[in-house]
Length: 174
Image 1 (tube, one colour):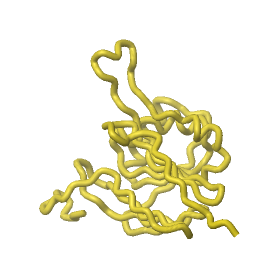
Image 2 (cartoon, rainbow, N blue to C red):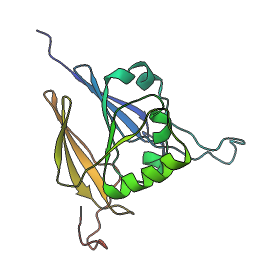
Image 3 (cartoon, rainbow, N blue to C red):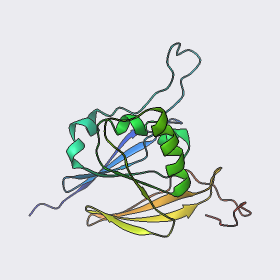
């Protein structure tokens, strides 16, 4: 019997600041982490923003079991309304992040009706083949989480953006 493999496919955010998006694929199921945008350089006249290349996600949209958002900065949520044009899966994020997402979705309605699910740091949820633990991280905005994504193939930790702040305003260090 051939062992099942976990595929980790970065669609943006590696080697660049912006358009963060990672696809985790295991046993015919896809979990997406973040759907960010990037602002153009000064020499990109007429370009308002840049989003990840969704082609792989579009081709495999029926396999997507969930979308996780680590925090509410544009480089992590800025492309969510465009992603939801192709993917009809629940979106999991903390309360503040979902509040920012709702505001974004009110400005641009996606093709698919969003299924927004609030999560808290410390929670563990099962999404298809993926067991996801949300853990608190400090960043330049509140209500940020990192992710422990567990599959039968192993555990992946995705932190999102974080900083080691020994005196965070909310009193809750990473």
